Each structure stands twice: as C-alpha cells, then as structure tokens.
Length: 116
Image 1 (cartoon, rainbow, N blue to C red):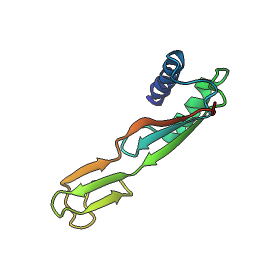
Image 2 (cartoon, rainbow, N blue to C red):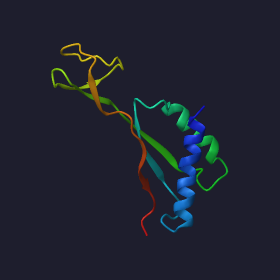
Image 3 (cartoon, rainbow, N blue to C red):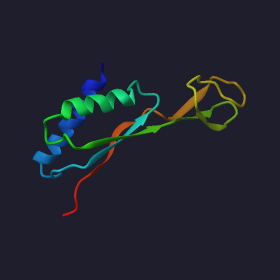
C-alpha cells in the first residue's frame, strides 16, 4: 500500500516545518490536493493518516482531501472536457489523442494553524 509512504512523507514534511519554526502546534488541518489519475485512494490515505498520527502531536489534526478531476483537451477537435470515467476518449469526436491538463496532482495545498 503506497499510501503509507505518502502519509509518512506528509508527516515528515510537517515535522520538518515545525523543527524549522515554519509551523507551530497545534495544526488544525492539512488540505491535500489529489488528482483522480494518481493511484492513491482517498479513504486509504485518511485511514492511514489516523493510524499514523494516533498518540502523536498530530492526532487531532484533520486531513482534508480535495479530489481534482481529470481535465483534458482533445488534440483533434480542440474541445476541453472533464472525464467522469477515465476512458481517455474525447466525448465530442471520439479521438484518443488527448492532452491531460489536470488530474495528476498530489500536494499539500495549505496547513491550518491557530492565529497568534
């Protein structure tokens, strides 16, 4: 389950930012952007985040995941569209020659901490 290494990386980033005094405890929430083309399963990330943070300073931190849809442009007909099902076929001209514009993201978008 590669979600485990992803969650571990997120926690390492937080710990590093805290040790560099870029962040302070408590951290209320972590907002993650996750493209639908990544192989990460959001529910697995949520579950593992809860498991890995139990008994740590991040135990009460929320992991908020925003899924990014797959957005494409057809190279043949130039139409932009969002793929609900990942079929890689243009719904307008049925071409498979597509440019993927969004949907591969995986990053921490923001971290919510208390106001000082």
